[in-house]
Image (cartoon, rainbow, N blue to C red; front, side):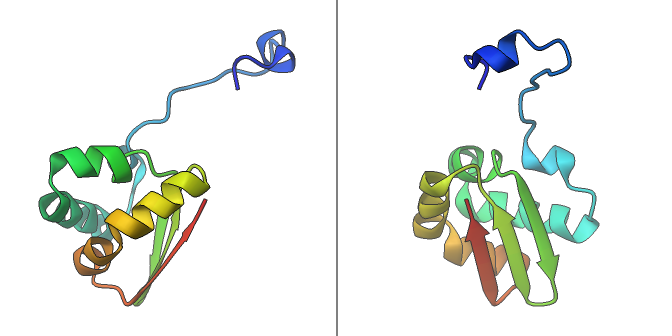
Length: 97
């Protein structure tokens, strides 16, 4: 995005690096779920697939996860979906990208 000329020359816009998801989550239940997920997946997979997520939300037995793009969404579904269900104790996981 920084290579766009409207962004580079605009003094009203700035860019920041995306911080890992665990630093942005405020809910204690979600933090516990993220810790469980780290244990299930291992640190390497967690850093690759989970830390860069944009957001997560949980309601009863369902969860909504927002990934950066469709590629990350597909990788999450392929590599992490069963682990996510186990770690957060949810039945339904919807991932959007």
